[in-house]
Structures are given as structure tokens and as C-alpha cells.
Length: 373
Image (tube, rainbow, N blue to C red; front, side, top):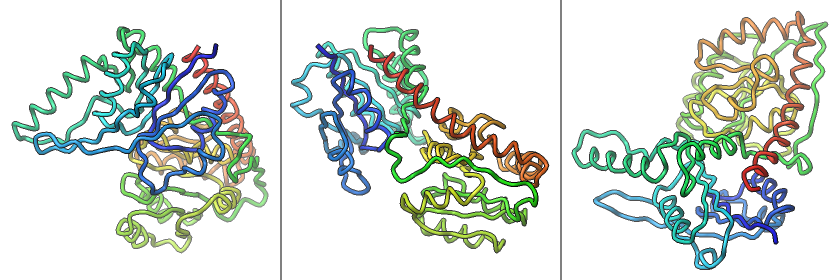
């Protein structure tokens, strides 16, 4: 009899659907989505491609002492089923939902694995009020008791911190499975750039939701500073921030193209030399997977988990931590390489980007099979 596991996550994504489909070949995989707000949710993807059973729960608001907490109830149909384990994969956790999952799993005798890539205990905005100080203190105590105080997020019922860290390490190696057999409009293209004559422009591409934490101003400042850079910014979002970015753009070699779909994204990635990902904070950053898959070396911020996990500095891209480091990488490493002095290194880097994604996908499946065995 096959083992049955329940995955809990916020909403459907293409890479998770593909991961669960692969795992369904060996296990009975079911998934509970706890954020079913209609905007931007790919329900059609789940219904069309999922080979696993799905459940949905609408989050509710819980008011406590003037504070508002989100929580999602576990549907009765899920509670009535028996699972070998429950795995929570969310980047931005609802504390009440996670506590509900833990208590239900313990009462039912189900081992549960709770993973949150940005979990550091439940965070409360800093305040000098006595109420907020007490609230933060007790929530940190709860984190230490129920979640073992394990940084980055894993708990295993009935286990000590050592076993919890073991599972944490398995899952945190990645769950962003990029389905190579279902490319979602993207193509593997190994780049071959000729060094003679050297290209007129070094072309950078930013594909991002437009918001301040993405630090797109880093890309604008870089393009303003070096005339050989051609920068394309694709995406939509915060209109005020986008207006500020356009006002900053003094170089005529900067263009904003707005939101792009799969076909446009594929075209843009085939026309540029580097994917630039300057985020201030990202629990992952799936565009990094897409860029590498398309053979596009990534110039990425170390503030994104995708960059830390996937980009090998000087092999399939470059990593920076500050704007000053970004400038240094361009001046000392990228510009000499693209001016023809070491152009073969760029071609090798493009090939390495593709190979790194092929290896990464295999490793993800191996990691999850180890977790579920």
C-alpha cells in the first residue's frame, strides 16, 4: 500500500504542481491550498495538469486584543483522512494556521514537517508599547516550545532539534522544481557570443514585480553609470515606485516594457546577456530558475535564496551583496569578459547555467524522496 502525504501551501504554482506530479508516481500525494483568493491564482493549472488530489481552504481573520491574525481551517474531509506525514511549504506563514496544523497533526498522531523558508519565529513589528513587548515575548516562547527554535523553519513532532535540523536541511535544499518536460513557453538556448567584433552593448534584463524591496534602482544606477550597458526592465506593480525609477533613468539605453507573458519572456531572455536580480529580500526568486534554464547567466543579489542556492559565482553567474559590489563585478569581471578578452568564458557560463538547472532538478526529486521514504 502506498504512503499518503499531505502538502500544505499558499496557492498553486507551476513548479510545485510539477514536483507533486512526479512524487505522485511513487506516493499518494494530496495538497491543501490555504490562500484561495481569486486574484493571480492559477486554479486552471491545478485542474488541468495535477495528477494529485487537491483541497482548498479560505483564510479567515481572527481578532485578538486589537490585533488581526489570518488563519485557515483544515477541511473536514482532510481531517478524516489518514496521512503518513504532513508537510507545510509556505514562504509567508500564517502563525495561527501553522499552530492549527501542528495541533491537529499531534492529536491525530501524524508526523508533521513544517518548513518556511523565511521563518525566524513569528515576527511582530517593533514597538515600545508594553502590549507589543509582551506579545512578542510570548510568541517567541511559543516558537521555542512548538517549533524547537530551529532557524529556517522546520518542526518534527516528537523529535528533538537534531532530527528537526536533518529534515530542515533536506527540504531547504530546494523545492522549486522546474519542469523541463513542460517548459511553460521557455526554451533551452545555449548562448554563443562572438568576441570579434565585441558586442556594442552588454544587455541586462530585469524581470520582476515592481516594488521597493526588489531594489530595481540598483539596475538603473548601473545602467546610468556605464554607457555600454543596455537595460530592459519588465514587470508591473507599484506605480509610484515605477515612476521614480523612470525619473532616475538618465541613460537612453534603458527601456521599460511592462508586464510580459511567456512568449515575450522567452524572446527577452534570448535577446539579453545577463539576468539581473538585485532584490533586497526574497524567500526564493523563481525568475532565477527561468533565466538559468534559458541559458542566461544570472547576476544576482545574495539576499535571495534562489541566488544563494543556484548561482555559483563565476561559473553560471555572479553574486553581489551591495551596490558597490555590483559595480565591482561589472567593471572587473563582466565588462572585460564581454569585450572579447575572455568571451569563451561567457559561452561556457551559458552552458553551465543550463547544466546547473538539470542537476538541480534531479537533486530536488532525490531530496524529497529521502524525506518521504
